[in-house]
Image (cartoon, rainbow, N blue to C red; front, side, top):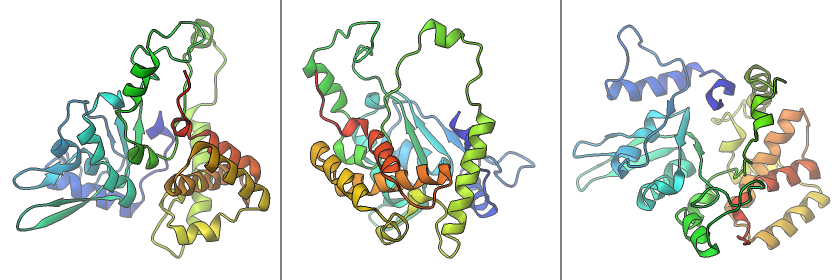
Length: 278
């Protein structure tokens, strides 16, 4: 679903991605250029080197193979914690640095990380149809497999409720990929104009300097964010991510500035920042 709504690769992005696949010998015969955004889905048993890159002669890992595309990690808590922690640098900086005694090598790794996990070990915490069989301690331990610093670097945490038979069997067509992609392209066009003189192309890549310029908050928005930060105990990194998401929500609506509604919606997408309540 996610790759189908993303904008096409620019020529510069295609060149960068193709270089990585060429190094790995993964370019198909007669295909000198990667023209579709990568989608990588490694298994939870993957090693640190397999995910981030490495080896005796350092080679790119799954993160670099997903450069300018999607890295999908299913059953996130099942990955080794040490393996997940190596994602911090690429999520923050868009690159991977592998250091050895005599040298170091840096590979690109700007990815859209999409991860999925159950709300608890049995999978039914918060389900209206089935009772959860887990204790509060089990749920806390399960969620604790994902560190706070890593969660801080993930822009959105969204609880997705289970679907019943009627929803699954409904014939009414929901908004399809084509309609969603049109909205995404429109928002990306607005961002391209916004960053035309810079080296970034999306809101997610804005440094603090540009956040102050393009995410100006009214007094009402400031009060809303202040209350959220105090009640949820949000970090400075989470604060910046909320601003980026709010700016993107405004772009999808074609709005010039940020409204309290944009900020409130962005705050709602930080589910795992809230304290667990049994």
